[in-house]
Amino acid sequence: MTMALSLLRPSANGPKPVSPLTILATIFGFWLFYAILVTLRAHLIDFPGQDEMAWRRALVTAAGMIITVALWRAMVPFDRKPLWVRIVLAAVLAVPAAYAIAWVNYYVFYQMDQNMLADLKEMRDSGGPDGFAAQLLEMAMSRYFFLIAWCGMYIALGYAGDVQRAERQAAEFGRAAQLAELRALRYQVNPHFLFNALNSLSALVMADRKAQAETFIMNLASFYRASLAGDVTDDVPLRDELAIQRLYLDIEGTRFSDRLTTTFDIPDALQDRMVPGMILQPLIENAIKHGVSRTSAPVTISVQARSRDGFLALSVCDTAPPGKAGGHGGGAGIGLANVRDRLMARYGGRASIAVSPESASGYCVTLLLPEPNDEQ
Image 1 (tube, rainbow, N blue to C red):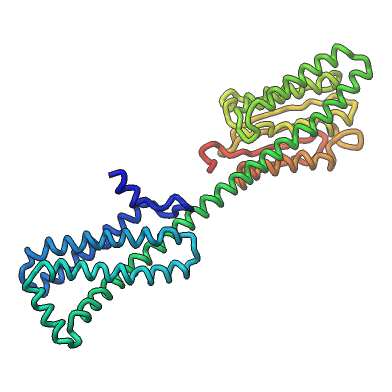
Image 2 (image 1 turned 45 degrees about the horizontal axis):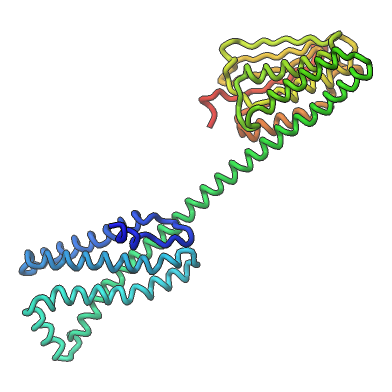
């Protein structure tokens, strides 16, 4: 049984666009259709001896299946060839296959039946257009077009498999490109933050604030340990994202302890909502860089989460006064562009970012993320 299956299995060399079971099913279906059609024809024209002919017809059908399997095996090595090569090959290989089926038909219906064989010999001896050779050619031609029809189906199935495989590969490539883009954008955050953090640490060391510098280093280590713990393309619960941002604000709070206040307004029901990791980092960093560091006035940075019309609204706001001494102005573009690109890569057009105009009340950025049941 194992040897028989190995003979039916396509060659291991090269791709296999169509499964062997599918091919065997088409062969079985074609020849079953042939047997039914011939049987109906015989009954319609009232051929005698149909009970006797039934088992002979079954033998011819079984032989036709075996010969078609051999035809398939001969075509398999050429599955990766151009279309015209496969068509020519099918046209050529179908000729001996059709003659083989015609000879089987001759043997079963004539050689095994002496009365029919005698009739055939009389036709052959007559040498006329209805002689033996003409009868055999006629049988072979009818089987030839039958086999060509099956070859056309086989080639069509192969190209359908190629199209499906190409679509799957395109989807995989698109997914890989999206993941690569997400990784690139995510890693774009940390070097920028590290540059600012090292500047802050340098200022503490130069001011001989050793205790604060030590606390700063410990918080910085905890921040990077938390931010690098998971896959950069994974979503994280909102509570974990906020925990990382609290570490970051603790780091900056060491530097701006006299004028930086932070508040978090997050309902318990939203704590477990999944969000892109580190998505708030550029927004909070902008609030520090363009709000707190550019003014001597006290600044409050607030982080808020709300459920709004099927979206999760995440807001990062600061109370830095506008003008030359404070406010964001046009300098927040890099961080916002990073967030905008990450949202596009992660959600497509289903997420958005809104920036409030700078006013006496400060600067506010709101992210609208689709609810889980709205994501595709």
